[in-house]
Image 1 (cartoon, helix red, strand yellow):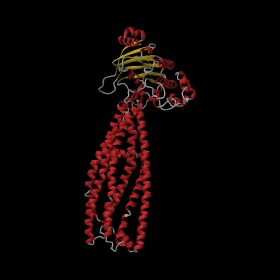
Image 2 (cartoon, helix red, strand yellow):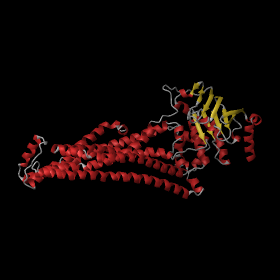
Image 3 (cartoon, one colour):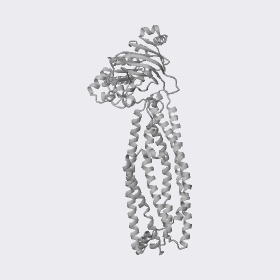
Image 4 (cartoon, rainbow, N blue to C red):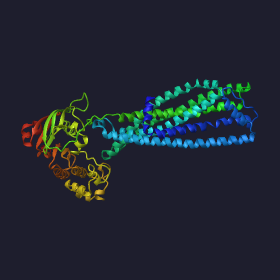
Length: 598
């Protein structure tokens, strides 16, 4: 119940609309059942000459009303019955429309809000969260799971309320006629409830499995589309098709198992209910023979209790729907309740422009408790305006060192100071506004060239965008594109070469004009011709800035103010190029290897 209340709690902003849905559900359920009492005069007065005989449990006022109506002539009574049933039908359908309308409004508003909450939460979470999650899994949470929630509210919750009201009205009607027979029926309900609950629990598990299988599908799909050049280049189309086929079939298996159990609920429910109806027919028939009730009253009793089969069957299906939704709700709440590892203090401060230095004070870092430290005992002072390069073998922590500056991660031990202020005390916005990032992974969005350049400065004028492009040595090739700056670059910049993508990334950083610049292998994936042009763009970008450079090619860092040599997470040497050639065996070896290669 607590889990279901959490699910319904996603709609708490719309209790008013939900209350209207509940109100119309109640009215619709009353008029849905109101047609049944017309059976009594039809059988006892219009189509036969039986005198209506009521059991003692029927209230006196109800007996008087029905007796008075039964004194009317059969033709007049037939007209009244038809009018009564017709009006009840019309009112039932009108109120059902408003019930469904309001419940769907609640469902769609809830899903809209939940999707927005998940998307906002994804932006708030730290990078370590993404290192543990697959993109397809996150896409499944924000698309498939929210769709399940919408169906659970618009259909599951709606039917749970409406059909429950119908059951209560029919049950109350049956209790008025014969409480003994009706109570006997109640004893049979555990035969329905037990399999419904058991199947429902299995449905919840199957829903979890099927959504995980859908996440696998999304992951394969997104990875294949993103890496289609590699797939085709290595002739792996058939392998990828087979991988998708296996994941697709796995999802199908779980869906079929769930459907089978959902369909099983209906015959189970109906079998029990109609068994009860036969027992009632026997017991009621005896009362007719004994003169205790009339045929019309017995027909009403049987109709009331057997009519419960339809809402009861639907309620059993709703239980399956809601169990599926509970599994989706749990997955959604796991994201919504996730805590970012990097967060601001209660009263963060805005950082002023860097004027003195950046200090790494005994910084240690590891990605998770129990793992090896990636960085160890990092002590470093970098003056404002200085250009510092970080070199070393792959996997020694070079990129991790840079990632600590904009607080993509926080040090496990130690602290980083900007002009003596611990960056943990600063607002993330003021910190990251000071920092520009150019990496080996050129991230462009499926938008125009101009929009990609202005990504960090949305109010930039066209002249500012063009000036940034010129400084990044990108203007000429942009103007050769079909629509110039208004050309759509394609998904991840698919329509551009690597060098062109990198120059647009640099133009984006130029336009932002940050004080501190982080260059992470910015030219490592380029050919020599592209690298030369990009290097010119980077030189323009680095003017009058504090720069941290991570580079595999040592020829690109020889002019740095200082070069840090990183080995096994520690700074083993520090100095200028010529000094390190003679003082650092590791640096000398790395340089010799690259020089020999060239």
